[in-house]
Image (tube, rainbow, N blue to C red; front, side):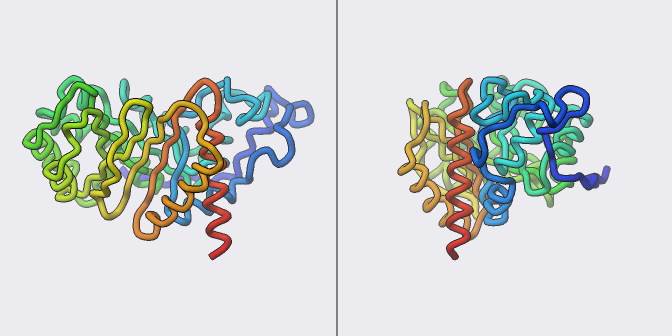
Length: 290
């Protein structure tokens, strides 16, 4: 099935004629957040950043303007950030109608990344998954055809230790090796995976090592794919301006020859989204200085 994006006017979540007339809808303070040009500039520089999810009413009013209806969250999110990591797919795959709605709500430059289903990573633990992987890839095909597919993240459980043979067999799945196969990344949460043998297997299949930073474990920064790389910045709380500045320099350099995906931690308060906004503003400023 082919998929063609329907041209849309620029999203305007600040106007909803049925629920929130434009003249009564509260707005965020002037210049509190950048325009969509900032995120678009970052995307043009091959940097795609955001958080894990967008449906958080508690992000008002620091991120979402006060009064924004939940059905317009994604519209606004995609004008401020260049990507989102969809965790919904860990438990259930989206319907075609859901994907169509997400694509219609977002900007042309926006990328959706998806967490692989728990059936693959936690229940089957990568074993005998060819049909599951094929179904996942086919489900997300409309997003790929629209040009808005980021990466598929295979996040393994913390108690799953390294198994090189199992990883190799999994990566041999036809759906991951066909022309047009989606870019993929692996987040290992047991330190036994961080070996040269595992990195070599990932390199052989153009799979990225997801470089994850959390309060409990930090993944070594090893880049195993030449077309893309992935970061999950999961430390609790906001990153400092100095840390954001360092991210700008570090990830801009990486994006000179690959797509770079960066996802800040989602929480009930919007520090992750605001970290991503600050980061993308820095990326856009850096691009303007070249």
